[in-house]
Length: 240
Image (cartoon, rainbow, N blue to C red; front, top):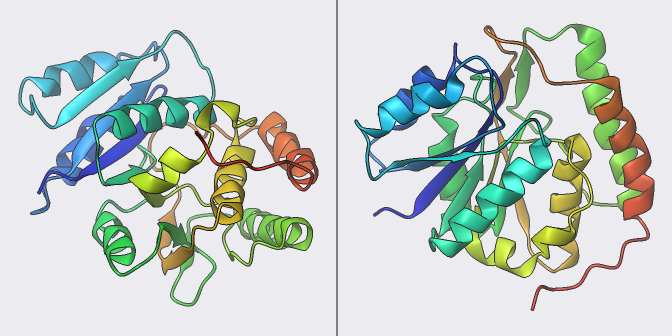
């Protein structure tokens, strides 16, 4: 059943992109992949287009001009997935910090009744590897901070490894999502909950990247810090 689309944003991921694509396509379940590439100068898009000849119906690419932010990449991917009528639409990093084998478990959580499933580092069974202790603590405290303001009850509020049922993305006003960095991940969860959708947290082990450079910056951190306060006063409406 070709019901699942994995969206993978890329910027300078030539060391990782072929390996992640082949790994996702190695499973028995026939996942499809959409690469959203923001004009990577290292040739990431060319690698993907070469692989499209090998996987002509399962691998897709959306090329954009320049870095436009993680959030806008996913929004573009969500529109693609909704238009193509995929039942399950995933977010996943290209750098193997998210284990592709967990795609099966996230999808199963939605089959078992969740409207969206979160690959969580901070529920029982979850873990983080190869991060310095201060970064783990900062990430954990970020979720504590988010919950103190938004009362979401989600242990890993900034998680970026997720599976949505298509109905969730159809209900959210995607073009009114305000944030583009890690605050985007919080905003999507918050709006989905406010619209009445339920989440399941699936324990995962997050492993820091081995190749390429992290996209984290102080600007992204500040957006998330102040963005949470702005979210508290958002009006959340169902898309028409």
